[in-house]
Image (cartoon, rainbow, N blue to C red; front, side, top):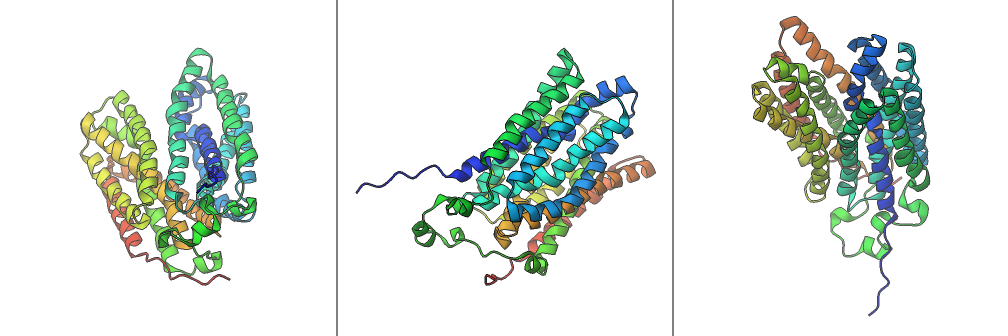
Length: 416
């Protein structure tokens, strides 16, 4: 019997394009901005608070935009959201290469961060969920692997450009990478969902989708947003994401000064960031593959608990091995939460309103990102130590895991 060879599923091209723009989105990452802090502050005399203020402002405004861009993704697809968001980053980086005043820096980098949190993160994260069911985990893991890999690769590139040319040239390089790897593939390749091209999800034939597949591989029921927000599970998971984001971000911004306070050298403290990014990249792939074989809800619960464990390791960290152990664990936690969140939402509520759901989810996470560092700073300024803040964050992570555990998958709804 001769069978026609199965063609390559277009969804993998879509996932590759989403991964490309996440890689290029390193231009908006705090891990890249920190490389610019010294040369820009030395040239203009700006202090650290003035520079970092733009990141918080952009994140908050991006969180406000996320629910609206999520609904736009559901209606029109990710292509225009990602292409437009990428162009904002391109223009922002080009303007940063010419900036002469703090106001100009604030306008440009705030717009970049709005695009990051409110457009690119929403469009790229949801794309895999729209195009995949059986391989949703690995496709989502690929996207978040590229996000971490972008920081790992572009950080030394940016430093090299600054060393041999200057910081202005480095912003131009970041703009070029975003345009070539992010904007162009997004505009040319990404589409809303497989049905728009006459395809079935995962590239299966109609017969394959209805026979010979395990139950978990059948198409999911598609929940309207009005029904989603009425289920207890939605709010339990949403609050848990806010809580765990508060805990992880409350450590991240203060990590280097804390480790130096613990007796580590500045070089060793900064090295922990690289270890964390590498572990995060590998963790994204691992979480994606694991979610295809194990309950995403169970994995998210375990990731939250691992976050609590990592914080206790950090509290005891007074040597390089303990510090790097924390960095590995925390890297796995950060990428694990980001990878599993859209997978959990899709497994509970299907693809129909995944963009809208993830927009609300991302807004909750970014709100946590804003609260965590502030809470750590207040505790430190009051007590002179981070100890109480970090202990509290570990308990918050445990509480978040309990919320996920009791968030039962809602009963299947009949389609409208």
